[in-house]
Image (cartoon, rainbow, N blue to C red):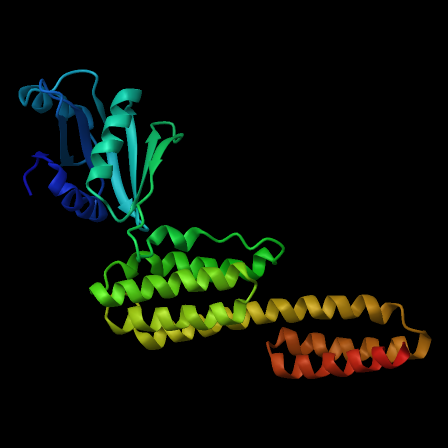
Length: 282
């Protein structure tokens, strides 16, 4: 690529690919015919683009800054950000039909504007992956699933056409399951997506590594649920009468040891017996 390049509407996707490799500088304005003029170059000195822009017929007001693409999102840091030019740049990028979100920030890190990818009819876009609003469900139980969705979301876009659409639909389904509180079903769906992405070589992990990490996170989520169960039982055991309380307290201590060793099956069995004994007291 040339050190300085003028970007047309058809070349915006190439611009995004460059931003995924390294941080780039950009400058944007309108030319004498009121047509958009956008230039990019590698590096972090966007002000050096002002003269080339003027030579190409551009003039003030002018926006410039740097941009980078990461985690399926283009971030533009506008060191010069006239409101009109930010709006014009947004329109220019929107016409390019980018498949990624675009965020406009000032040089203080404040969000100025954003451009979300539009949904084509019958398709699911990447923004659905962040659309998790599972009210009333433990945030700690959801967090690992949400983190895995965010990790695989940009990789889905690298899958070949029909498979990409299929995986996007599966991702949207997993979000729906999480919002409905059906976390185990969502877990299964996410594992399917992870395996598919690993299998086509679009992930840094191979299939075995992806499965191992998924199992580890699933076990961790299950451990958290069992710890909460033990805490709830502890409160009920404390209200039991004298000798029964001592006996059940010892049993709960055994369950806690199993949890510490991450022996979830033994811990569950021990807590099942404690719950049965507590029920008999009622």
